[in-house]
Structures are given as structure tokens and as C-alpha cells.
Amino acid sequence: MSSFFTHLIRAFFVGILVFIILTSIQIWTGSVFVLNKNVLLNFLYTEAYSIILYLINYYTVKFLIDRFGKHLFKLKNIVLGIVLNVLATAIGIFFLRLFTEVFVGGQALVQFLSSENPITYWLSLTIAITITSIFYIVYYNQQKQEIAVKTERIIAGTASAKFDALKNQLDPHFLFNSLNVLSSLIE
Image (tube, rainbow, N blue to C red; front, side, top):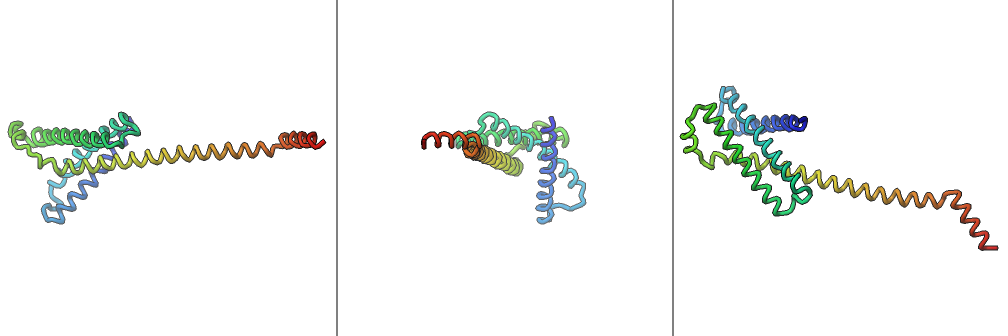
């Protein structure tokens, strides 16, 4: 359960970052006033979208990692993962929009469904695909580090075994026995 809260906090900070970037773009283009009440509403919407989409994408990637393990980075599995992430994200965005437009905004359900357009999903899908790509990159780097650590452990074990073999050759009992054998051969 603590993993969920860890990811919830990360999602919150991702939402803050996304909000700062989007607000900066809007300020730069002159389409928003800094101290407008819509800014607070935009922050809440950005946080809701970021948290939900982050968790959807995290658990989708986690499912793929659990399912495919180290074979996740085969082309077929990457394509399947991308399709699954985009589909899960689109469904998540649809339900988020449904909630914000119908339940919060008071729009009629029929009007909402008739006005749905794929263009409205573009920005959220782009952000979600970016976050998913970050998940894949992080997992790929973790997997490479684990492989490097295992390789180093094997190398260290081999070196330790060689060292023990050399140490045993210098053991006084071994040396005494060897000298006794040599002296008996010389006689």
C-alpha cells in the first residue's frame, strides 16, 4: 500500500510540473492571467488528470513488466505495450472528461457524447505517452543495472575462488606436504 502512496505523491509532483509548463506556455502566449480564478480550477483539473493518468500508465507498465519480465523489450511486446498504454490512457481521459464535463460542469450526457472529438484527447495523450516512455526508460535502465550487478557478482565470485585456490597453495600444511613429497622423491 505504501507503494501506491509513493506513486500518488510522484503523480502529484508530475501534475505540478505539467501545470507549471502549461501555465508558462499560456502566459507566454498571453492567453491566461496569472491571478485568475480559472488558474486554480486549471490546477485542480491538471492535478486530477496527472494523478489518474500517471497511475493508469504506471499500473499498465507494471502489468506488462509482470507479464513479460525481461522479454518486455522485444519489438512485439513493446508495440503491445504502447497500444495498451494508449488505449488505457484514452479510456481514462474519456472518463475524466465525462466526470469534469457532465458531473462537475453540468453538461448534458447526450451533449457531451455528441461533442466528443479525438482532437480533445491529443494533449493528454501526448503527456501520457511521454510519462509512459519515462516508465519504460527507467525500467530498462534498472534492468540493465541489475544485469551489470549480477555480472560483477559473478566476476567477484570467480576472483574470490581463484584467490582462495592461490591462498590454499601457500598454506603451511600444503607446503610441508609438498616438501615432504619432494624430499622423498629426491631420496
